[in-house]
Image 1 (cartoon, rainbow, N blue to C red):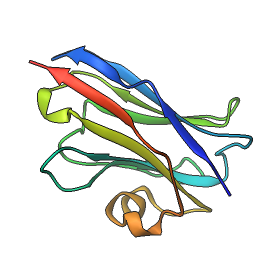
Image 2 (cartoon, helix red, strand yellow):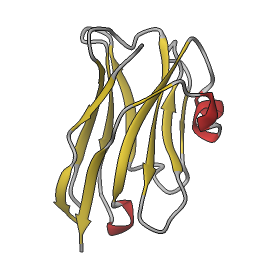
Image 3 (cartoon, rainbow, N blue to C red):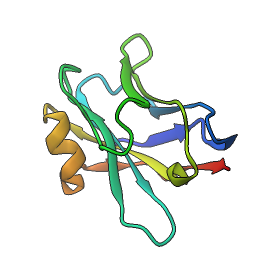
Image 4 (cartoon, helix red, strand yellow):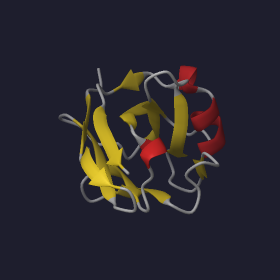
Length: 128
């Protein structure tokens, strides 16, 4: 059973940056397709970004393109989500999720039912 732990959330002003980290307790994420998803009050669950198991395929929601970057750190077996130029509408609980093997970034982001493992989430609050 893969246990995912997110960190890096917090309160930031509009225009600021945060970096979220997703790690697997006692394991590494190198062989998993990993995604970041968010849930804001009153809004639908949204796929934010995903990276394939190989790292060769990434995908982003239109709302975050050009501002967020997903990346892998093979040395640490972790996945990051760098969030720049944050906006109040980015306020949400961000969760990472993983599925073993290769799925395209697009498939991962648009079909969260593919993901087998989920973290509990980290809250990102962006003040105006």
